[in-house]
Image (cartoon, rainbow, N blue to C red; front, top):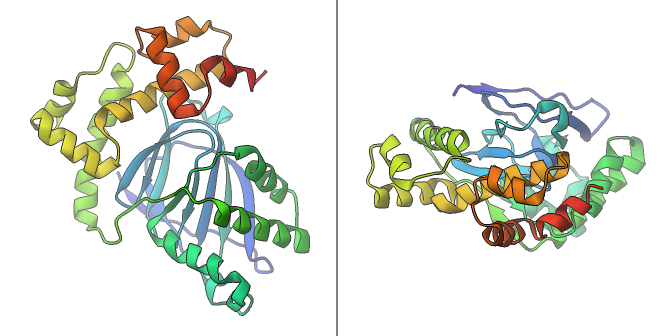
Length: 282
């Protein structure tokens, strides 16, 4: 996977730019000088931030600092035309501007400094922040700036946060580990319906199962089986939202052979039962 430096154009007379964009699967990890706030409105897949590799789904909210390598890749069954994110870019110079030197904005500046490692916000009320970000794509001038301050205020209220990448990582080590994790991800996506075997995944990296589990947990912050469960639930969520298939059928197509287990894991990850989740799209 190639690394690309990307230049994001923020209009000269603006501090921020917010756009709703198709969530495209790309082969290149990229970085840019700007800060980035990325909110997933639809779609599932994996997110690469620095040396962290994790799954993402609807409602994923991440703040990235300047020059931090990152990439969002769609799951194979997700389509670009139905997967979107709302992205806000703002200048790296914002933290040194006179306005942001105000005492009232000290916590915002601290938040931005933490984003150099990538900061994921685990939010309960997605609708409020999504509605604000959606409005920002249509606004300009002072109204837009006020809404951006509201977003910062909402981010500060979210106590459940996760630093994604390690503060220092070698490009060589990063690339090497990424290729290994890629092999595992490809195996999971290709065999999610037929069945996943830990021994087979470990063999892909020429590791014993125990060593593989420790490696995978260290590099992704998830156990291997936690990752598999998230992929299955992500696949099920997409089918629930976009098809009229019976929940029992979706259970089996997502790799579960027991409806009770499917309901339990779906609710533990999504916060709703499959039937409740489907109703939110009716």
